[in-house]
Image 1: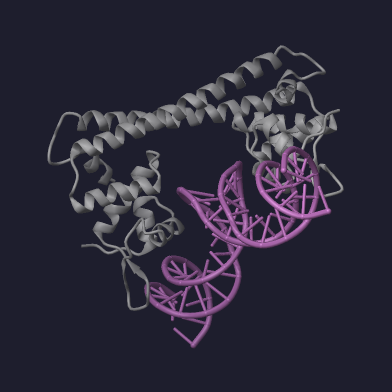
Image 2: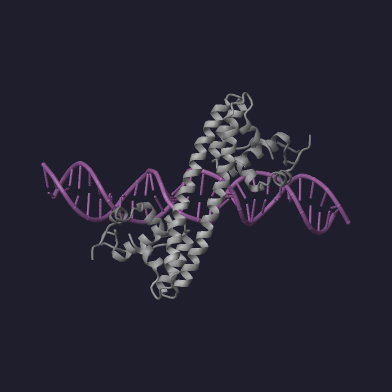
Length: 132
Length: 132
DNA sequence: TATGTATCCTGTAGTGACTACAGGAACAAG
DNA sequence: CTTGTTCCTGTAGTCACTACAGGATACATA
């Protein structure tokens, strides 16, 4: 088993040192063992855990959701069905965000198109932003 | 000219009272006039301004961007071309966010699909989340 | 051994955009 | 006047980080 310092863990996982400490403080990650001098010593399980958290964050899960999921895993008290459902719910949330952004994009493009017509000195974009 | 209390302004614009105060504090909005008793009194121009800010927020502009834009408008020192360019840059940012979310969505759907195959007791979703 | 450098520690505070009190004042209606 | 509603200021919290400051530890080199 290879042990790592926090800097080592940060390099191996791509998660910022400050962020790792933050996760520990917020109890997203367990407290690691320490050297005699007080430095954090991380093992393989710590690496696996942080990878999990990192992956989940990248997929848009909130820290709260991640803690819940991790707790399921830790107790071994879950079914693949449960996890599937959580994932499906989350996909829906992501899809809604996409739709919102697309709507935003559409409005912006329309505005840009209007302005691109070269109307001066009034600006259709500014005008439309002042409307109710 | 119809004057409004902060509650009135909030109702008319759909922006939260606390948020309006926040915008004032952060100098996103100008300080309104006050009654003898110290209550805020908003006029039509205040309404127009808040509509502008609200619209821009809904379109994903940051408060900083909004302040810049508003400052252009206030000085009358801008061209429709400038605004157009700002808008186009912003559209690009929104489009990138959409792509990121789509990537996220794709990964999540793949994971859900794997789990949907009914593999028990191991969970492919959890397994893949632990990978580097 | 001493020195220099890099890494680590804790605690605090800041970012951006809100949101939510607490305690008290102003206002309107009965 | 009393009661209920709205408003005020100041402070703090949310979420997920991020960035110090000041000091300690660990390692490498001379």
